[in-house]
Image 1 (cartoon, one colour):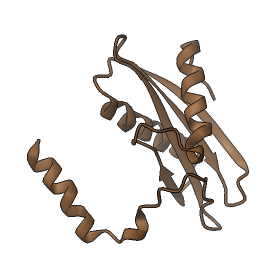
Image 2 (cartoon, one colour):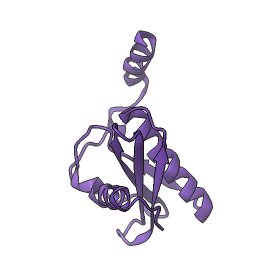
Image 3 (cartoon, one colour):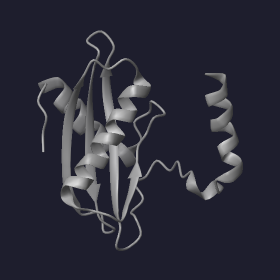
Length: 131
């Protein structure tokens, strides 16, 4: 585990600082790109999670959304990983190619990811996938 943490910490040496934008406000993608926001809810007692995904264009227009329930989930980290995979699958199904994938694994509910968070919460409560 320690080697993974060290590897992650060393990545900051190679990545430009502008890659990390932690604004509380949703930022549109560049023209000709789509932004995919994802978030998730997790129940440790039931070992279940629900992913919420929202796709918007550069003008902020909603292009699609979905939610997916996952069973046998072991941790909050796995929950966020599954949410990102749900976003990528949805994008693939829609045939989109120029995307920005944005999640929030900081256990806060930033307004920039609020729609995806609400999708995850609502589907988790109803126990039904949604599109």
